[in-house]
Image (tube, rainbow, N blue to C red):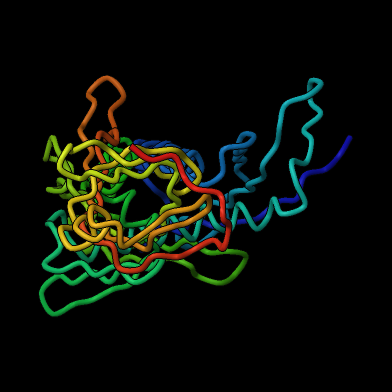
Length: 298
């Protein structure tokens, strides 16, 4: 039997008591399980996240959890998915802690200011500013299931007067520390998820697969963005005029560094936001591939 790499985490419910209400414990741990599985689906799709509980230690109510990534083969024979299994588990937990830190900051409100810089997003709420990965922010404004699990979890903790705080530890090092006053902020309804349609502006590189030489027709260009084919209208007037006047030629492999508007609509059946449209608002740079083969044009 192959033994999967494992990571030990401790969930410490800070309390003066050596006991914790069973409803609080079960609700909190079931919702944490749901939250971890939602994050895993977003960032690591292979295999199953297995969570096992260890003995409860004396003192503040502390529960040890053993996490590993496995794929089911023969009965009782979990197989290691990849050597980087531990790194994947760490990323799942770090992602969740960053997400909860963002919920704590925003208290359910929309950010006052959002600035994207590469793969990071600077988020301002009042005088407080935090920087998170782009994927963490995307999850905050899109993932209804994760938000619901977080709200149920921390609402249960807030309703239990014996719980003064919560810590999550990797081995012996805290990776998340929350006080009782933080529970209300995390359990607050997320205003970003109350909208049926979302628009997000990001900077990205798009590879051209089909160019429209007559922008007046309002036809959509073909691109590859983040590994997938898309069709998008280009609304940059200066760029379109240069294309129309024949000042720019395109070859296979040419790409644009562009500012994109991504439109998503909430799908109640899927309980998540689905991408419906991408618009190229501004072309900031043309990146030539050096190839001579001309591109498909219309």
